Amino acid sequence: MFQIKQKHNSDCVIAAVASLLELPYSTVRKAWNGTTRYGLTTNDIAWLLRELKHPIKRAYYTRKEVPVEQWLKRNQKARGLASIYTPNGSHAIVIENGVVWDPSPSRKLTTTMKYDLYEFIII
Image (tube, rainbow, N blue to C red; front, side, top):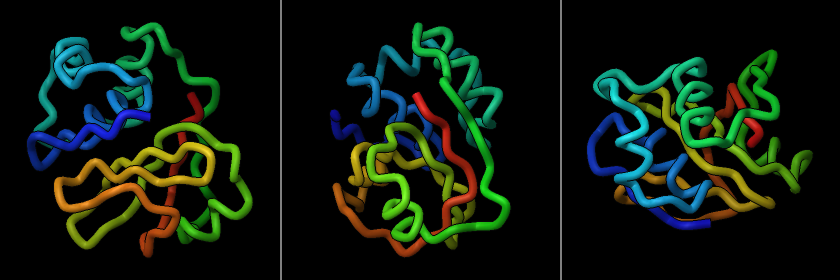
């Protein structure tokens, strides 16, 4: 997995998709011709992935928020994008084989995270 950082406050999905698909940030950003000002919805992500020839295999919401660490224990082979709640709002991260990549400029690769996951998109 590439480790591509966000370039702006609300482009975490662009950076996460680029990291997961191992594509340059610019390629993913060009594929998404809309704004990232308010983030991207699940439908936006599905559209973007189709544009990049990587359709979603499955997307689901958890019934209630689940701590990322707890979710990782039950889904160690998972590969995809997760939506989490942070103090600053919703945020996209990459999960691949039990490892979390947070594209925030201040974060790095980890196997732990204190936030709650509420959605996961399998690629």
